[in-house]
Image 1 (tube, rainbow, N blue to C red):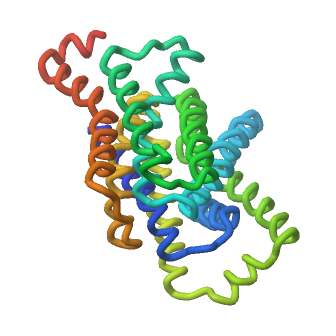
Image 2: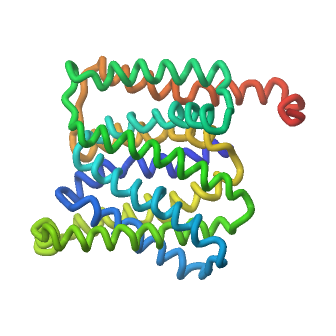
Length: 298
């Protein structure tokens, strides 16, 4: 059940790329990140006011910097430079990076099914992102790799908190802190190059407003609330396999909103990556059904 719940925020996150291109084109990524994070954080703070304890500010600042400020900025760079489907499918590589990270840092070796799916994912991604078959912006690809690392590191920090801190406070204050960091960065960028910000102000319309409501409400307030809550109930690697819904949302929303189109071969590679990202979790679920007692004891 937790895996199914993990698919809900992943689905909304997968729509970020197409929604951004459709409703908020040419907006500065730093501004988009600030508008996504700070209003959502302040909204959650109004719903349930919290104040971190003295010893909690350092870890909250780290989460705000990694999970929100850096990650949101990178996500909007991807959204403005890569096709929606490619962004969504590329993010299913998160389990591979998570497994390698926890193997090297936490000495947690992946099981045979995770290793197999990880290797296959790398091969399929190599074929999909082959420059000879598809032209992709190198800045967007670099942002994707960096965003994946943010997910793994940020999720690990969040998971390590366990029950030490209230999950609502963690969610709220990382959004507020990250939003403040992005706002300051956006203000600095405005003084360097004010043209894109002036264009946003002069051309703001209802389509932009609808996009902001979607990004702030569903993609951030709701999705990050579920994200922090679920990480207290499941492992980071298991949670990342719930990201299956991310590429599906990216492909569907990209097709419907901005007319993304790929060859049958490219769609087959995307489908293969999605299946491989889900395979280990399917096998674990089958084992739990066959021998629930053994799973509980272990």
